[in-house]
Picture 1 (cartoon, one colour):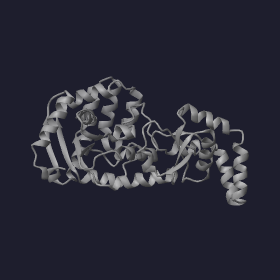
Picture 2 (cartoon, one colour):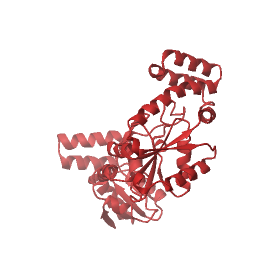
Picture 3 (cartoon, one colour):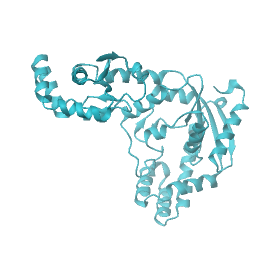
Picture 4 (cartoon, helix red, strand yellow):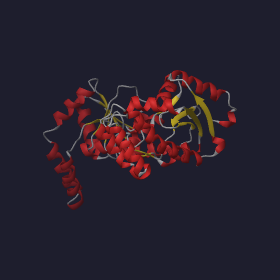
Length: 347
């Protein structure tokens, strides 16, 4: 049985209905619906052949070529689908709900699958994703200088039942020149947006949404403009953490990283850091004096933070001191602080 549904209807289905993306591996790698698995009807090269035939010869010839290319693959498609969906319930989509997903849905249905065919395909999901970035939300931005523990506090806020979106986790980058930590691999821009959209679709728009203060770019990725504009105009809780506490935290986090990585990252910001400070920072890394290295680069990052704060409306910035090293305590302190502020000062 084949049932055509909209992408929003798919997300309302009971959990456990896998989503098969029948586009090519290259298309899937560029961007896919989070949670989908790749069941490519054509290889990357085959899709080019079919597309060229469609344009240069015609639709019917392209269809025949498609059947020639997939003729021996159909049992493999079914076996792969059975591995992921042993209950024989599966959703299927291609780029825009055309022939590729239609053919796969037909074959799986013939074998006995209950198939949910996504109307409009991946294109419809992308349209919904871009719309989600524009929908108003009750943002609360958690700000603070580098090393204040903002990401850890966000996680504690989430554990306390608050709505949180961790952009750095979605971007697989910690937001500075050293942000890859020499191990993180960032997704594509499109996949970053898809991952963000999938979190946004489930939020309560009437409830506060906590997001860490970020620059427009996180590593090589860019926060979608409508989403970033909302962040920029939202109330920001500026947590003030002492320099020594920040240095200790950053030394523990970045100190164990390879010296070659830290030196390369420091060289990338040499124009902003300045020649003398760059030389001193690299010398400290080479000598294994990680605390001194952190103190040197923090001068630059603290200045950058101050410049960014100056761009915000003063009435939208609420400052509070944080002294505990216990992030659960800090998260509760922030929530208590928010509750003492008049409702007109925040969402």
